[in-house]
Image (cartoon, rainbow, N blue to C red; front, side, top):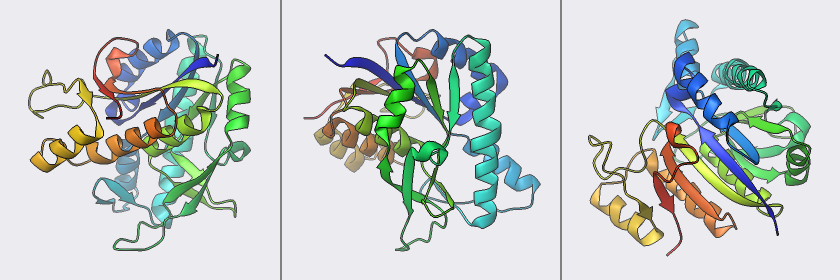
Length: 258
């Protein structure tokens, strides 16, 4: 029987504000068993870009990453945000290790081809070295993964954190029984953006298509759910979308196949 592993992706202001980060890290530290944390940091990257006079450009919630922006996100994601999380977890007795995809070649990507939009230095995951990541986990090390990968030819690439969490979950499902949890500020996938209690408890592909058609699910939630479905289809046992304060609780939206 495979041992259980929980992969938690957290982003938004939760990891970028000291009070919410401290609260989240305490909950994460108390999560039993094997675990991995994947984090974002987009707000901090945008703030630093503004200070440096670099314009932040977004298309459908995805950051356009030119060379200057790549330098910023590498500093912010791989440095400031990642190491603050690692230091916070070490203080709580968690043997955390901060990683980007370039470290130990754990995640290699290809630069996204130019189609309707030129996203610049954005990576689409090509390969996850699941054996190395699994080895770290089995040694009692908790990987803290920044949303950065590399192309194998010397360049870092900005890569969506939800996608990294999903790709890690799919690859590690060979070694572990995986629960993938997407945490953010809301209580789950909502049927009414203005009502935090309007959580949709269960979403399947057919319900997803229905809600998208009705305009209930839109924006950044669409790629998040698409990643969730791909993970389930690739062997991940369970995907949950919930509030960062509800780790380990029976709350939020569960994603399943039809």
